[in-house]
Image (cartoon, rainbow, N blue to C red; front, side, top):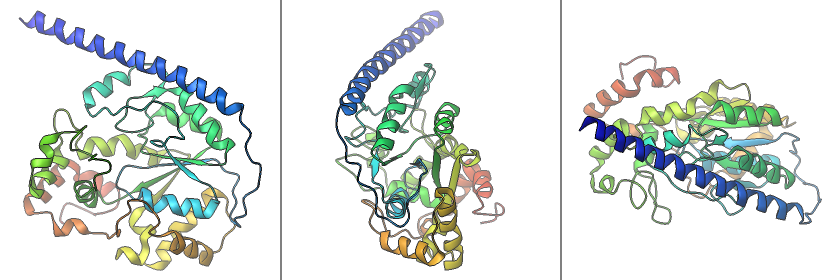
Length: 330
C-alpha cells in the first residue's frame, strides 16, 4: 500500500511538472510574439517635463498590504513615469493564480523561470526580461508583488536596476490582509481562487488562520520569508511604511519622514530639497487605488492575548529583527 501511495504521489508530481512546462512553453511563445509586435510600433519620443527626472531604471516590488499604493503614486510624481502593474494588460504575459504552495514550489524547480507575482505560476526568465525591455522603452516602471530570488536579483543587477521594497509592522499586516477589500470578487485568502472556508470565519479565527497558515496556504512567516531577503540585496532601497507616512501614521515625525523620503531621492539620483520631497508626498498621498488611511498600530485594536502569544511564537524574532519591538514583552 505504501508503494502504491508513493507511485501515485510520483505520478501526480510528474503531471504537475508537465503542466508547468507546457504553461511556460506557451507563455514564452506568446511573450515573443508580443515583443515582435511592439518592436514594429512607433512610440513618441517627447521628453518628460517633471523637474525630478531620473536616468535610473527601477521597479517597485512589495509584499501585498505593505503600502504599494502609497509608494506607487509617489514614485510616479517624483519621476514623471507611469507605473505598470504586472497584472495589467500592458504586461502581456498569460497569468494564472496558483494558491497551492506545494504545487508552486514544484514549478519553481524548473530551470530558467521566475515568479513575477507571489500567487501566480512562474514565467520564463526571457518573458520577464522582454517585459522590462518594453517598460524601459516607454519610460515606465513595473509594480508587482515579486518574492526574492537570486535569479531575479541577478537579472536586475545586470540591467543596473533599483528595487524599491517596503516593510511594515507584521501585526498591522495581518489586520490589513483580513480587511483587504475584494477586487473583482478576489480576496487574498478567500474564494473564488483561495480557501472558501476562510470567508466563513470570524475575525478572531481569521487572525489565527493568517498567522499560522495551513498545509496548503502560506503562513505569515512563510510569506515574510519569501520577500524579506530583498532587504539584504545590494540593489534594494528598503522603505519603512510607517516612517514614510510620517505624522499621518501617528508614530513618526516629519523629520523622520523627510529622512525616509531622502532615501528614495538618493536611490533615484534626484536633485530635490526636503521641502520638494514633502510637497511630492503630500501631492501624491491618497492617489493609490486601494490605499486606506494608513494608520500604524491598528493591530492593538484587534489582537487578543491569545493572538499575541500565537504571533510571538510564529514571528516574534522577525518582529524584533525588523525593529518593531526590542523583545517579546509587548
